[in-house]
Image (tube, rainbow, N blue to C red; front, side, top):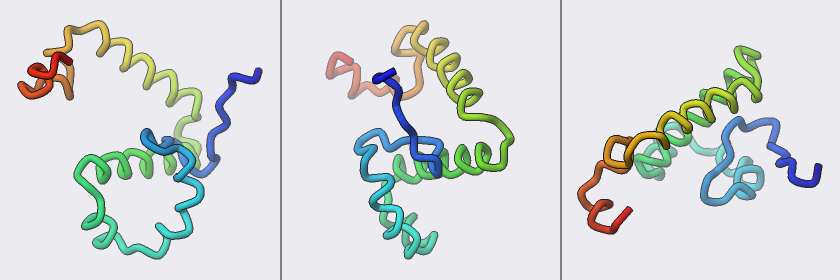
Length: 101
């Protein structure tokens, strides 16, 4: 059971780049307003924040469980990885294909 990842109970999605930052930076985030946060974050970070907030609310309000979310996420991922990369979101860029990805 040493391989079990413990999730922060207040966040349904973990930061991809720095999971440990999510908990420690929470106090600083509460002092931001929505317009300030939107201005400071990149487009991708704003999208990620939106998804994290929505998933957190849905789990906390018991609309679905973490296990149900994980199952749906993994099913979607499996469907995507079965497609050729040029047909997948995020892999359609000519720049990325130039890099050999």
